[in-house]
Length: 223
Image 1 (cartoon, rainbow, N blue to C red):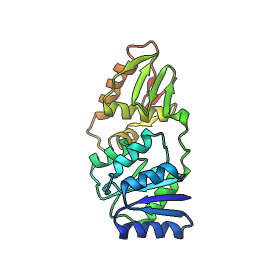
Image 2 (cartoon, one colour):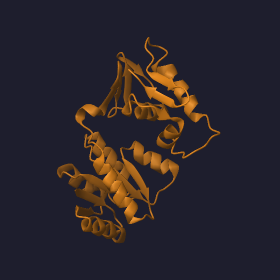
Image 3 (cartoon, helix red, strand yellow):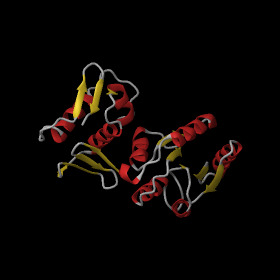
Image 4 (cartoon, helix red, strand yellow):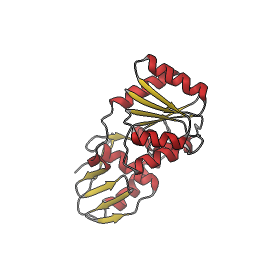
């Protein structure tokens, strides 16, 4: 694979680049966000590994700009900013995975391999659909039957997760991990609360119910 590593710490950047080269990958290493954005925009890469704190242009801005230009190259954030809010910001900006420093190279390698196995997002997949419900990921716009639906950021993330897995049951634990980054909390009812809010906006004003409860299992979007 051809990989671009964007990391301003030379020691970390060289460590990652050399390790990936030893595994047979072609690796370019850049240290400045603006230069890296130009490089990523003019060269085809299979994966980008991006630090968040970069000179010139920070990593989140690099990825946001790429996604705005419809560049869907998979992105792994590799950063020391490991708080929940930091991870959410990175993923919402368009990152596909998030690894916090310090890290084991074996885990980095495994995450790179996992990203490589994912099907690349096509132009058509920028709009997710279920029946007459449409979610435009680039414009962050949701409509049903042509009617605009106003969603809060977490409602949007929850609906996107369900739409990407249309027809497949998503358990409460899966949703907690994917949307709230909570591994397990038996006390919280945050999933149920947000599903209820989502239904009030996406289902109740319309004739057909799309968000189904699978009793004892979880939820799924069903056309």
